[in-house]
Image (cartoon, rainbow, N blue to C red):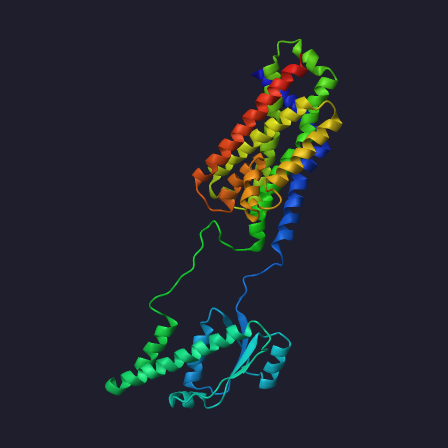
Length: 395
């Protein structure tokens, strides 16, 4: 066992001595994560009101014009933009300049005309060619209709109870707070809080996995150089077995990759607000399985490559193919069912599923068990293949 740790310590010392290791393991994934997050997030949007802005001018200042305003204020479609200093000319200009989606003017005498059940026409200013005009007009008509309906209801009740005002207020409140309401909710899996956070929940694990594979260049080169310098042959003349050598190299790569994951997960949690720690044990399990799989891949590359040039080729091709196919760049959810099935040939797809089930989809601990099992299967396959090849090259 000590021989395994000695070999792992020797490899780590050689790997960490190379400045390229820091760039591939930490600097590049952080920079690319931020780049992709900004690229996919689109324009930054604050928590502002997304409703259509409609200018509002009340020339009546009566009770019913105030009731109408209250109904419109509760709209989920339009947002009243009221400024008493504006004139009708000002509103026309603001609509023409596309600073307001439309404008509504309540004429003087409106409240009295409503009470007489002969309401004056509201002045509606809008661009007929604008697609939102009909939507806004429909919302205004609905509010006006509700106001008149409340008045007629109160008048009917008031004929027998002499309580027009309470009846009107009750009818109006019924429109503002209907007894049956449809509420739209979202699960944590699809909750949208911020475009950049959504992007980071994909790009953070994606870049972390991609550059974990890229970082195998240095680790695999150590194994290649061990054969080129005949250090392997000298090592085999000692009491150290091939199994100890193989496990020592594997432990070094695993320690490197897992350490990278811990640092990048911490960075994502603290600075990108990717909620890796929503279920810490699940995230840890996926990280261990992914590190085990990528480490076995690095071991395989190290025993297959015959030169440093081959090492670079054997690392870069799988990095691009497996990352692109596995959804590290673009979510597989955006592709068809056939491509999603093909994409899961890549272990990166399973690792992405495991991380995103926690940080983006809001699923429970059990959701990572299948991705972890798949990654474990890939790790075992790569390791067995590496052991078979190592037996041959060390003879």
